[in-house]
Amino acid sequence: MIIKNAGQIITFDSEGNFKLIKNKSIVIENNIISDITDNKNNDDAIDASNMVVMPGFIDSHTSCLCGHKGE
Image 1 (cartoon, rainbow, N blue to C red):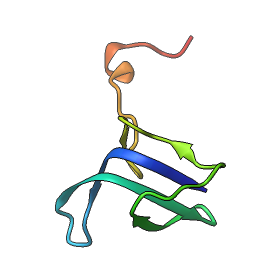
Image 2 (cartoon, rainbow, N blue to C red):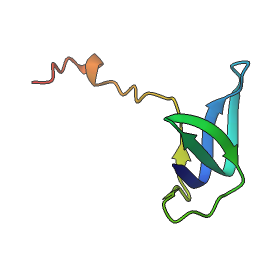
Image 3 (cartoon, rainbow, N blue to C red):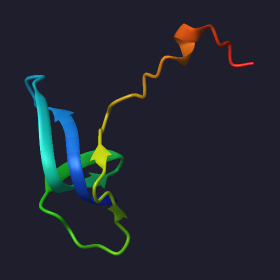
Image 4 (cartoon, one colour):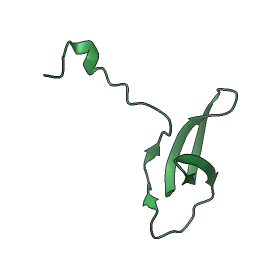
C-alpha cells in the first residue's frame, strides 16, 4: 500500500524527537512502514494531498473524561 502526496507526516525519529516531514509518500508492506520517500505515482495509492498523516498515533480524544459510559 502507498499513501501518496502526504502534505505533512508527523512522526518521531529513532531518538524520540518530533519530526515533521512534508510532501512525501509512505510505503507500507506487510502492515509495516517500509519507506517514506519522494511521491510515488500509483493508481492504487491513497491520495493524502493537503492532509496530515500521523502513523502510530492513537486518537486520544477525551470522551472517557466526560463520564460517558458508551451506553
